Amino acid sequence: MKVLLYAGSLNLVNKSGIGQAIRHQKKALEHLNITHTTDRKEDFDIVHLNTIFPNSLLMSWWAKRKGKKVVYYAHSTMDDFRNSFIGSNLIAPFFKKWISFCYKSGDIIITPTEYSKSILDTYGLDRPIFSLSNGIDTQFFQRNAEARDRFRKKYNIDDKEKVVISVGHFMERKGIDDFIELAKQLPEYKFYWFGHTSMNLVPAKIKKAMRQEIPNLYFPGFINREDLRDAYCGSDLFLFLTHEETEGIVLLEALAAKIPILVRDIPIYEQWLTDNIHVYKAKQFDSFKEQIANIVEQKATDLTDNGYKLALEKDITNISKRLVELYYVSDKATAENERAAER
Image 1 (tube, rainbow, N blue to C red):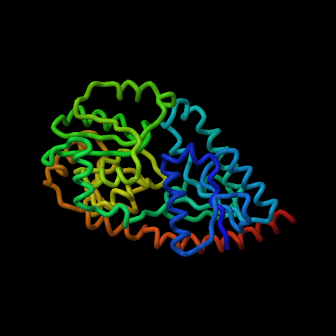
Image 2: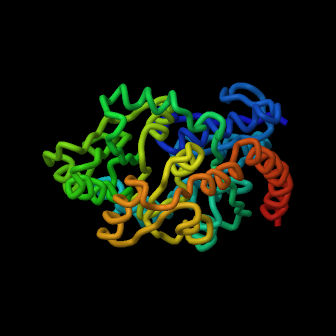
Image 3: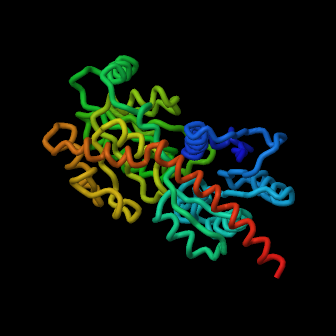
């Protein structure tokens, strides 16, 4: 078996969760010594697609004409496209039709969680859909004191200062507006939002919020995974205010780094993350504000060991085994699709 990890337009998603997912897939294949390539000119048996750009759809069609198997990873739904970029709500219904068209070109569809699978099940895709986490390299994101020191030294943070971080694009869906307001109302703590989005794509409401003069709020931009690991280790709370996700790779990273976590209480995390057991949850703004203070001041119970156990379940070594199993499932699905086409 040889797998093509198609990397068309990777430069457009390299700094996103999809880019990280592709790197995880590569590591998973390496873990099991599965031959793989990113060069479409080489021979291969299976093509693994991660993006919904036209070149990925064309790659799917070309691979099928060559008798190859196509595995389409569904990272996106209409729900997590809303409230993202300028005009996203307006074109969301068309986005749903487009991604459905792309996903249906695969022999099987893999999506990160049972939650996202439940959404895709309503799309009428007529393809087998399986849930499989994007996975996490728990060894890399392991907590250590040296990483904490590097982070605090880089950003001139005193050891006694309390730091709250989040990671993501500058999107309303990611909760950046609430993050900014929380920083304004909690001036005794430092707030860092890591990530980058072209301001040409950011809605006016978010731009206005980001332009406020808030002395304890920082936007360092995109940082590499080494620096991001240091940020997890060097901060006192990972605040994940997202309104909608298909999984959230940065959340897996934070769990692996054993940083206290406060998330918005949304459906995707109902069955996976238990409030006051693995992480803390909140729905209302005042509850976020109160819990932030309790957590960073260490008045709340330390849940990080429980969260770390969840990260271990989604370690790449475990995910890789299931991924390869699904590659074999795609073989059967290809034959069934071909028989259906003949009828």
